[in-house]
Length: 203
Image (cartoon, rainbow, N blue to C red; front, side):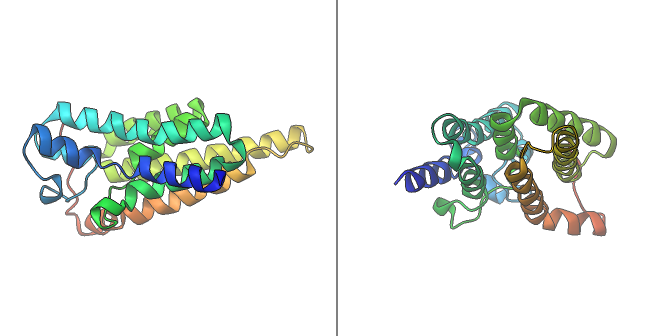
């Protein structure tokens, strides 16, 4: 029963389309008909309202954080399930015929629930890469890859120092799955980058 509750709660939290809801209420626009058609904060920014985009970003982070931190505190054996279904809820929301966002902000919320260090590493990497290349997609993919590499490296160091510790193995597997999913959700952006039609970030 606990598995069902955690799975359902996590998915439903992740599936809340804040970008779509906020742009409809405050801008009277359908974000799915703007720019890339994505419901995330980057595309909400293309709708022309920085405040709505910032609120969308914040709420997408929060909806990733809440179910995972609850699972971490009360159902630690189900934390991987909570992480995965929260993320899948965002990219495949039942309310929007399973056509959701790219999951980056929700992924960041999940990272905050798992490790503040990894979360701030993601933010730092994203900002640096975005300042250099000006592409949100490149920043997101590179930042998620960096988190995966650093987490794996950290695990190997701990194992060398103390072979008896089984450290973050499941978490690192999950970070690998998230990286693959983020690449998947950015497949169109990757194609645009190859064709040199990808839009740069304008702030």
